[in-house]
Structures are given as structure tokens and as C-alpha cells.
Length: 281
Image (cartoon, rainbow, N blue to C red):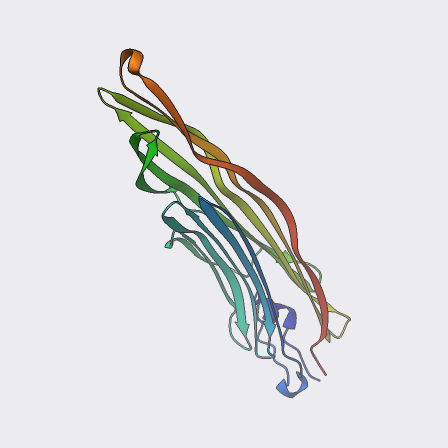
């Protein structure tokens, strides 16, 4: 009698037993990759949201992986706000491995090796938030005004995994948020300037729900289910600079909109996929 290693767990790497099967009965490899990109922009800023889910099974090892990234730019700052990855792998006869990492502005801020022998509920996030700044000069009327601007950013990823019948579910939720601040100050004998505003660069949450389930009592079939959602609020707010020059009756006031964004708000069902695959001949 042939005894089968639970392919369910091999596919997502969430557990491996010492059972083996005759390799020649496994005929079907499988791979699916689901990419998603959402670029948005306006004259002063841009963002791009990237999400990718990968499922594969080759009779010897299985992989489930989700990678996400959020890039943004404002004025002359180009930022990799978030890079997040979680994956689980397994090879026949070997212990399963899994891990997750989060990078903010290109710096690795958190890495976790996940214990796949128990139900997971892990949240990864950096402390404190990241602040990147620069300086530009703008003319407000005839007055050159130095402006300090920057981006405060934070990111996190929540990972949950559990069992469902003869299968597993894996939920990966990366999120990124960033705000722009502007500070303008000029206070000399004949001129002064101030800046006012409230700006949201991006507030993005991705939600990847992955399930791998066996069907029928012989476990000849595997069903792959993936649902991905995106919730985005981005590029909304305004900043204006008010300046004045001169003294007494010769004093003149000037205003200039530095930023004025209408904003984007989207809730997208990125992917709703289900596939039933014969894995044993």
C-alpha cells in the first residue's frame, strides 16, 4: 500500500511528516503567478502599488509566496516606502521552512522565522516611523522662500495561518502609510513667509487570502484559492505659502499653492481565483 505525504502541507510548507510516496505516481506540476500594479500620479507626486502572489507545486517541493511593494515620489524624493514578503516552502522528507520580512525605505526593519507547527498570528512593523526630508526654494510673488519638506512613513505586515479541514489558509496583509509635511519660514526685516497644509501621500492596505485544500477521500485533487483586495487612499491634501514683503503702506501680501491634490480613493477586488488540480495519477 502506498502511503502519501500530505501534499496539502507540502504545497504551502506548513507541515511535513516522515511519510513518503512513490514519486512516479505524481504526474502534475503546477505554477501560477498573479501580478498586480496600480500606478497613480499628478504633477508633484506619484505612487505605485505592486502585489504578487505565487503558488507552485512540483511533486518534490511546494511554495506559497506573497510579495508587496509601495513606491512613492514627491518633489525630488523617490522612496521605496514598503517592501514586504512572506513565503513558505517544503521539500519531500525535510522540515518545512517559512519566513517574512518588511523593508521600509530600503532598510530591513523586521524579519521573522515562522513556526509552522502552530496557528500563527504575527504582526511585523518598524519602530519608530521613518522620516526623510529635503529642501527646495520657491518664489512667492517676488520673494524666494526656502521650504523644508519631507515624508513620514510607516509600514507593517500581519500574517495569519490556520487549518481548514484537510487544508490550510494563509492570510498576508501588508500596509503602508505616508504623509508629506512642509515647513516654510522666512522672517527678516522686510519679508516674512509661512506655510499651511495637510497632505496624505498614501494609505494602502493589501489583503491576500490563500487557501490550499485537498478534495475527495483519496486526496487526488488539490484546490488553490486566492483572494486579493486593495484599499487605497492617496494624493489628497493641500499646502499653500503666504508671504509678505515691504513695510508700512508699501507692504504687499502674496500667496501660492504649493500642493493641491484632489486625491484618489479606491477599493479593488484585485483577484478572485480558484483552481482544482489533479495531483496524483
